[in-house]
Every structure is written in C-alpha cells, then in structure tokens.
Length: 345
Image (cartoon, rainbow, N blue to C red; front, side, top):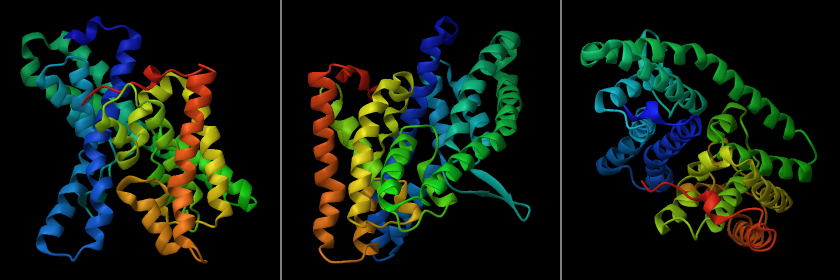
C-alpha cells in the first residue's frame, strides 16, 4: 500500500484533491443541465435524465472516497471499503418514518473528514488483518471509519449551520454592505468544504442576488488566473461546473483568497446596487447550468433587466477576473498560475 510511503503533506493533498475530483464528477452533470431539464416538457426521456443527474449528486461520497483511494494508491478492496464508510457517514441517507431516504449530496465537510479518517483506518487494518483483509477489511473499515464519520456528522452539520447564521446576519445590514458581504462570504464558501447551496437553503436566502454574483466572480477569477496551467475542459469547469474544484489549492495556499475576496466584494456590491434577486437554490450555484442569470431574469423587478443581468453575471465578473490577473500575477507576482494547477481527471 503506497499511502504508507507518503509524507504528511502528500497525504493531505491526496485527501483534498480526491474530494475535489469527486465534486467534479458527481456534481457537474446536474449543474450543467438541471435548469435546462426543468424548463423542458417533462417527457419520459427528460424525467429519466433528471433522475440520472440527481442520483449522480448523491453518489458524491462514494466517488470522492474512490478518488482519494486512487491518489493514495489503495487497492480496489481498500478503496471500496473506504467508499462504503464515507457513504454511510455523508448525510446522504436519512431515516423518515422508519424508511431510509437518499437525497442531496451530503455534508461535504464531513465527507472530507470521513475520507481522511477512513484512510487512516484502512491503513491500520491493512497491517493488522494481513491475509484476512480481503474478508474482514470491508466490515472493519465500514464499522470503524463509518462509525467515526457518523459521530462527527452532527458536529459538521452544526458548523455548517453556524456559518449559515453568520450569512443570515449579513443580510440584516444596509443593502450595499450586505451585497459586499454576501459576495465575499459565498465566494469563500464555494471554494471551501462547506455547501454554499446547503447554507443558502438553510437560512432561506431569498431575494438576494449578490451571493450568486460572488460565486460567479470567484469562478471566473480562478479560471482566468489559472488558464495557462489547466486544460480548456478544466477552464470551463470552473464556471459551468463549480469553482470548488480549486478547493485543494485554495486551502493549501491561502494567499489565493485575496484576489477572490477583492473581486467578489466589488461584484457583490454592484449586484446589490443593480437590485439583482435570486432564490436559496440559485444563491449557491453561480453560473452552473446558467442557474444564476436565468433566476435573476425571472425574479428581479424593474426595467432594463437584460442589461442589468449582463452586467452582473458577465461583464463585471469577467472584468474583475482580468484585473485581478493583471494585478496579482502580472504585476505584483504574488500569485502564479501554477498555484492553481489542477489534476487532470
């Protein structure tokens, strides 16, 4: 098992990058087409496609754990055992009326924590079980790794709820300040292990478009700043999928938050000034599947809505991304494109 030979930094990087890869695979399909499918006539084909991308989101903990296992050079049995433990502890499955119900993509923060704990548990049992690991390792990792994850799940939910309370408090301030704060908060959330959609939904963030604008701006800043290092597919994945793919780089290099925060603060203020509106669902998605601009078109009042949406979701975010690249990469040299290099998936 190659994981035993990795340094602490390499081990941590594998956990972060594996989860980021899981997010790409599990969440991007729904982000790209969910809004389009909802607007189409609900034929059997459309319903089937909707079912497919919805279930794909719930597979996030399994895919993330397998991706972590691959990066740690685990065998098939070890990766599969870790995937079971992570799925159990993810929060994807809940009990209602004595029945098990699967929905959502789980608590991302706890998914990451469980993949970390389950990885260590897997390494330990790999040594202890010896030739018996093929028989007993799945059960051992499931019970111990998954059990630890279930213990931390309420704590991680509480952390996410606390973040939601902070965001809710920001909505009580003056409109311009509120727009700036929400732009910053959701830009940070979208590249963190926390669920921006979950927090927006939990606090009922209705009527505010700045949160979505912050995510759009963050995604474009990261995409444009990293365009020399990443493929075109990954470039597009930042804003049509999720900028959370940069989570590993952001957490390991905190300086990357500086241009994201500055750009999102300005864009959030502009969004608030232009009276952009949204829903709890759209607030956490950014440009994915054009959910943000489409919702703003439907929810915002006043004249010139087309121009206002264009400014909020395209012109200002792109301009801010180019300015941040010029300042932080070309002039100050504080950030390098390679800081945002992503693993090819």
